[in-house]
Length: 287
Image 1: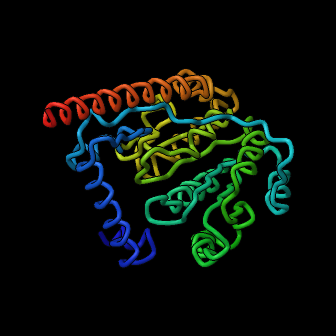
Image 2: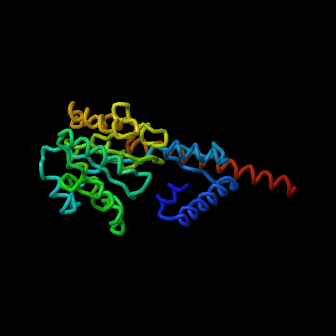
Image 3: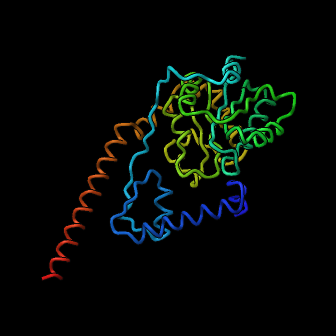
């Protein structure tokens, strides 16, 4: 629990979220006409383990869509960083929060090893809000002073900015997911679908890993991550847009709409049947 307290900022906030979650599960278990639209198998397993009936949980495809952004603008610091040393491979990570679960320290440790081995990389880390300046500074402090020009650590990007970044860097970058736990992992999927070579931890607790072949997974330690990036660099596989072709067979706007409509039809049918049963019961009691 200490890690959870740290991740969410305080013990009080964490316990408040836990109480709200437990209240929500009680509602799901006590109501008749309540259904869950589920993106993640981790979500499904958690709810079933908590006693929620499996038949009220309907799986739908994640609504991950690749956007071609033309009207967004990048942060000036980011723009300048991207166009310096254009021959360098860009290692990229974007997180909503900088915390224990996202474990950005792992990317920094691996990047430092790659730089020591002479691999031409530069690292873009975007995460947290303006209020998280100290957390970003703590990450910078992990980097030796003479290597800090190889890293850009700024606040998180809005979705349009993020998609524009992916479109710009997709032939010369690797998106690195370093999470210890992800209920889904929307940003790594968006990166992969956009054509950015994307690698993920080989962890059951990281849902996004089930969408990727082993070629794009690493064991959850610095050495494995470093070797994975190095091998992609040596083979130039990062520039071949393979992850988007693989992901497009599993994730698309069409698949999302189809799964959503099928789930909605099921829910509508079941709700109607329950209403009829309830009406017949009332009628039989009345007469």
